[in-house]
Image 1 (cartoon, rainbow over the protein chains, first blue to last red):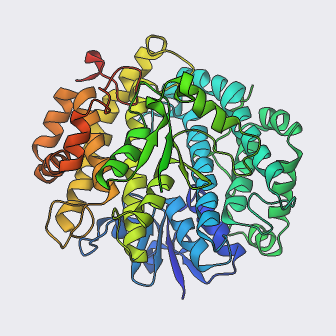
Image 2: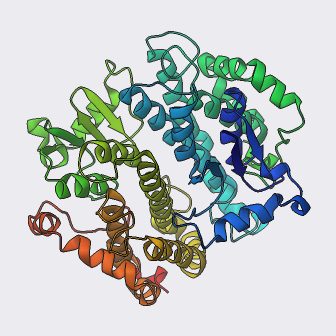
Amino acid sequence: MTYELYYWPGIQGRGEFVRLALEEAGASYRDLALVPEAKRGGAAAVVKVLNARSNRRPPFAPPILKAGRQFIAQTPNILLYLGGHLPLAPRDEAGKLWTHQLQLTISDLYLEIFSTHHPLGDAYGYEEQKSAAKRRTKDFLSTRLPKFLGYFERVLERNRARGPWLVGTRLSYADLSMAQVIAGLRYAFPTATGKALGSRPRLRSLYDRVFERPRIALYAASGRRLAFNNEDLFRHYPELDR
Amino acid sequence: MTYELYYWPGIQGRGEFVRLALEEAGASYRDLALVPEAKRGGAAAVVKVLNARSNRRPPFAPPILKAGRQFIAQTPNILLYLGGHLPLAPRDEAGKLWTHQLQLTISDLYLEIFSTHHPLGDAYGYEEQKSAAKRRTKDFLSTRLPKFLGYFERVLERNRARGPWLVGTRLSYADLSMAQVIAGLRYAFPTATGKALGSRPRLRSLYDRVFERPRIALYAASGRRLAFNNEDLFRHYPELDR
């Protein structure tokens, strides 16, 4: 089956968590964000899926994965689906739930990262909410980030397999997402992230191991993986990185 | 099996989404929030589970459901699990994913509701972030809330079963959570919610149908369902309800 991925062009965003899973698994997929609007791709393709009146199970927002005739939305839900069809999650029920639980906690983390620069939400530009962003980021970097990273370091430490991965002996989609969040953190808060990761060798190793996977390395070098930028989920404002 | 639910005492919070599912299914469970600390319940019980070094798969935060020897965390993940074991979700894979997708969107909604009164996060009291809360709430009530409620009304409308529920012909855990969010919205923003629901008859009906379910009505009358209060996820500040 060839999957189709619908997501906004020009940013990695939440779509990137899905892309990394598809790439690592070597799945066949068509990324509509890379298709020009003239060829029925781009933002227009996303809007079309969102507005399709014929869809009895409409998505609220992208990313959206089309698998056969099914449209699946919500990043962790897409990964739950992919984990059941590609070798990206354990097969047993307890292992599936544990991987998904980690993914939902990773999702909480990247939502908190988004909130550092947009605590008042999307409706106001960054400049309009800069002082709120500074206050929120201060707490995020001093309290929340160490709490999250400490947690994931502990998960790696407690994994009986004693390998580089969060769940058992094999890489899962949660590892890919964790590495992506670390990449985003390093872009957004290079100084604070460097400090926070100083005492978390297992997370640093997870990041390295993910981005040296042959398929992930190929993807990163392909030009299809966009650069981080300040329209994206992770944004770099030097005044926040303290 | 008798489940155990670990959550903070004194509030409904995220634990309530799990309680409604357990109550509707008539499941046997022990709610540790209602057990005094002297009898190994209360907040101390939550902290104990969070800090248990013996748990190879530690939870990040409550609610936490103990099912046999397994500790399951993250509200939507707990409901995914319960949906697979109790008659609260479809049996087919597409139906399961669709129900979970709706639950994750409901989860996004209640997180946005929390952000109306705490846009800068938990670290600052409400009084310390009141002006940020006013700005965030203004956008929430004018843009985000109608977008979410319009979406869920559309989901009800497009459900081929033409009954009161979000998925197919039978009540699912997503219906219970949706009704709980409507209850919370009515507490937090009575004026704005009244207006927003005026043009959404299907959501009003879903709410009524959920809270008149015999087991839910019994639970609501039992004294075990706590009243909403301003330490909780949904909070009522009259100055925000405009």
